[in-house]
Amino acid sequence: MYNVQERLEQAAVAGTNLLGEDFRLKRAMEHLAPLAAASPVFGKIGAALEHLLSAPPEKRGGALLDTLALVDAVVYTQGKAGCSGTLEPLPHGVGTCQPLTYTQLQPLLEALTGTGSGRYAVITEFWQTHPEYFSDYRVLPLLVKGLGDSYSTLAEENRDRLIQLGPASIPLLKEGFDPAGKREMVYRVMVLDAVAGAAENDFYRAQLPNAKREVRGVLISALQYHPDNLPLLLELCQKERKEDNRKRAWRALAQFESPEVEAALKQLSQTDWELAMYTLAHTNTSIASRLTAQLFEEELALFDADPDRPLTAEHTPRFRKLLDALYGKTGPEVCQLYRHAAALTPVLERPLDDGHQVPRYMRFPHYTAPSREGHLFGRCLAWTLAHTLMLHPDGELCDVALELYEQDSATHFAPALVAQLHRLSSGESYQWAAEQMPQNAVLRQSAIQTCIEVLGRLVWSSAQQTYGFKNWMVDHNDRLCWHTTPIPNLDVRWFSLFAQSPDQAYAVLLRLLHQREAILNLPPQVLNCLYEQTLQANNFSRALDAISILCAQGWSDWDDFVVKWANSREAQAMGVNFWEVFRLLENLPIPPEKKADQLQTIHDLMVSKKLKVCAYQSWLDGRAVEQIALWKQQASKSTT
Image (tube, rainbow, N blue to C red; front, side):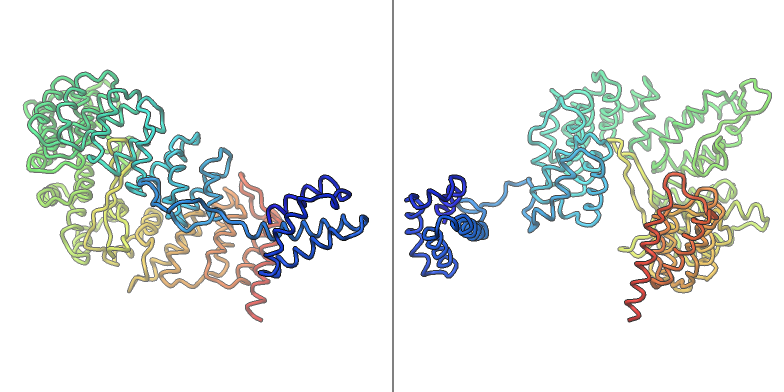
């Protein structure tokens, strides 16, 4: 067949006048003759060849083209791909062989290897819809190579995806590793650190002598897992020249529980107090807890000895570092410290002795603070305890929180509430909180705000069917890591309480009800609150969440919802764009004709300039008209 094809192609080039003298074509036709009896297709080709060779000169051109077309069709449809030899498994660590065609993978492969715009959206969509594709042997090596992508955000996300995929990429990460390399090598170490830990300790140590710049820093951090690295880390803490790498060495060393580590940290606190506090703030070992409490006590002892000791501006950053280091610490020494610090709160909340006519105080920034100036010492201490209990519901610390609340209920309500949410059943913890609410309207609102701040840290777990406190910590590679600590559950009456303060509690209600199934006995006022606040806020992402939540809870009043949303006060100020309106309508549980009606109303308002167009995107007139027609067509078909 291939000989016949070759001779026909040659004839098409040389011309049909020489066909009668082409003995090679005649020989190929003779070799094909035995196949003619075996298959009708080959018989048809043989007949076409005979007709070609016997045709008069003026008709040979057409006959040649017909015959060549038939031969090409047969040859091309009979093609196959393969290689000789026995099949063997892929080498370990290059990915898995998945039954995916090139067509399925082509957009992802091009996005991972390309350089243009739009790649980020393609890769993100594949990760959300088909995360299993990234383990394929054609994709995984490109994902590793993508750690050096010129688009830094994409490189970071490639790193995080490899971490989520687990140990599959370890051999690829080690292959061709350059300890003097740049960001790609830094991310390779980060992935190895996260998925392998101590298992790759020999690799970290082997690369360290030739490592440079940031690669050296992440290799030093990775030494924190294996106790055999203690002598090396002690040496690096003293001899490492670059400040950032020396900090990494101390942070890695501080993860170990040993007398040598405790002695080294105590010595550091005497020679470099700032570095010691930085190190202690990044670990919650028992040694770190004891030493943090000890250093805090030393600072407080100065004011024990002299309560009138002047407070200066230099004390603010010093106490701030102590409070930062105290987060997450537990143990008897820490419990005693909280008692001692709370007792000295009046002394530490005196005006600063800085010569200013207007009194100034030590203040510490915190997201719960009502102003940018931050909290005074006592309130910041209380929130430090509250966040520690969200992370570690230590029994003794819970006792301390309730003890301090009895002494100063206004200051220590937050940690006491966290302790009760951990200790009591859902109904009992709500009842306790309700009994603490002051009668005074202003004080009551302040207490409700504290409840909003505390419960705003809760997230729902569909797997565990309960809530948990979600807390973040920065790991040794400065990556944000989240931890969730479950509580017994949340009484439904909390939602009614928050609905009384819709402006402050709207975002928290969305967070608490996110991904919840229908909640039995959920008061209608809660859903009314969400509905009204969503219309007022004109926040697109929150509106999408609210639609999902309201649908899950059985809400059915969607008449002119998106029209009202687009006409809100904030929308009038910020403007409206087509795609947000379209997405909201698309997610509403209403028939197509009602979606078309709402979009038509908004479109008419835009055309008559009664609605403001979003500053960063024009209103798409043609697209709006097209979508209205499409929804009406769908409505017509469903009726038919």
